[in-house]
Image (cartoon, rainbow, N blue to C red; front, side, top):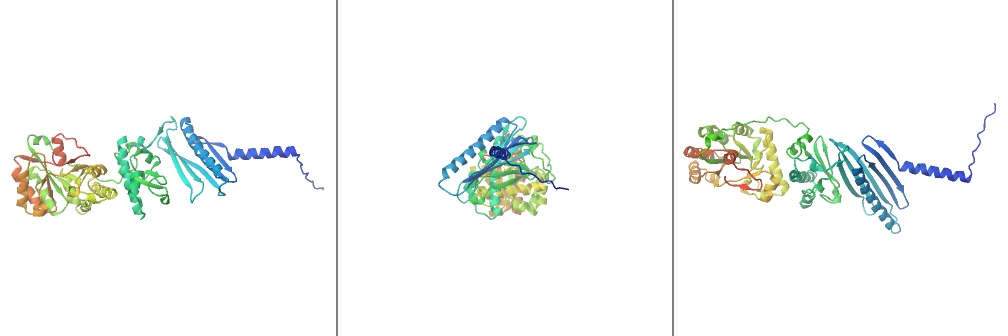
Length: 458
């Protein structure tokens, strides 16, 4: 049986040219093509390699024509800028330039988040990275930004403070040097500072571009703000993670109508809670139909949590006196926020609520501290100097001599003599005055507090 021999197919010059053109056309089509994807209308890939540069671009062609046009215009501008630079450097340098444009498209609740990443190398030690994010409704084409997810636009200020806090924390946790002013600028209340974000199961992720909060060597930094910190800032429908369950104590609310016509005094106690003195005070408040305000130290809250719970359960008001009783004038913004946040966290873990009243140690507060604390600033106008005298009778006389309607009295429930002096004063003043918390006084006097002010009396 004879074997069959295959004949060679000889191509003419014309056929070879046609074949070459066909191969090139197929190759180019393979390098620049569209395909469908369930998250977008179409996707475009472009690859080009020349002697002095390479270029690779992936970008989506979206169903929303307005967003598509915006994205395409942006990418085209970046591409053209790169090609212009490549042409200018063509005869100047032998270094091969490179442009890479990629993207990610993810769902974000009822919206989609498109992030464009651009890496360009035109010489030097490293690539230059740029990024731009778009957030939009895939059905309507409506474009949104982070303010869409905020309770209202004023909450951007609180979010800015949190971003600053967590950026500093990132640097400190990683033992890195940082420039506080640089970080302040990069986290200021300009919405352009918050154009790259995402919601995850851990909270709100914010991505900061190169050079936004630090030098190039620090890279692109991202932080996650825990969801529990976003209550009252982000709309509730975008907060879904179950928090650690804390038994929220609901203290009794007094009928304040019985105090109408009486003068009001607010006894306030700093530096606690404690065991003996605090509980001695609580044991005796009902004798004078009294409730008081405690400005507690976060560092003492866990140790004396039973006293704190008891005080709150009785209907007394709990405020913050910071964590470590440091002079806030001597601290940077991050440490001020840490003193306040750590205290509020400690209080919330025990009684289920975060205080909104702050008494700065030594009374040292100002406009800037009030702004970053985002709390109501409460000081005093009767200073008993109980810490100095430690004499119950002298403390009582000081209170009685200076008592007036709307007064706020400063005491400390870490001293037995301070508690004794306060109770002696209540005994003497009970016929003329009602003894109320700061909140009760505010309600009785019909006052609306302002976080931009400091209150010494009412």
